[in-house]
Amino acid sequence: QVQLVESGGGLVQAGESLRLSCAASGNIFKINTMAWYRQVPGKQRELVATLSSGGTTNYIDPVKGRFTISGDKNTVNLQMNSLKPEDTAVYYCKIQYYSTGTYDVLQTWGQGTQVTVSS
Image 1 (cartoon, rainbow, N blue to C red):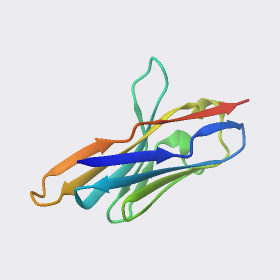
Image 2 (cartoon, one colour; image 1 turned 30 degrees about the vertical axis):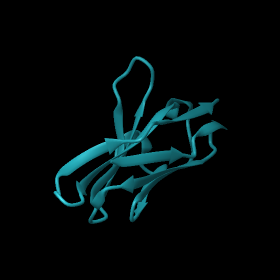
Image 3 (cartoon, rainbow, N blue to C red; image 1 turned 180 degrees about the vertical axis):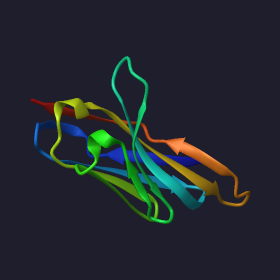
């Protein structure tokens, strides 16, 4: 059993910053990729940023230069600067990992954390 626990969401004004964290625990042999998604009501969940085990990062265009994804062992963070009202969403972390023992490639999601940016 693997769990992801997210923290760091909240309400901020436009231009301010927030840092999201996601801690993984459980039967993880090695994390392959880490990612952050976001979702607003009535829309599909959107990939925001990814971090590979080799350190490669990717971002969607709307957040390039403002968001930074980072990871440390079993934790993935998302530093969000210069926030805009359109960044308002529920943010979810996701990891793809090799399980201990069987080395199956699995993935799991965090519970989501609300980020609200007021104008």
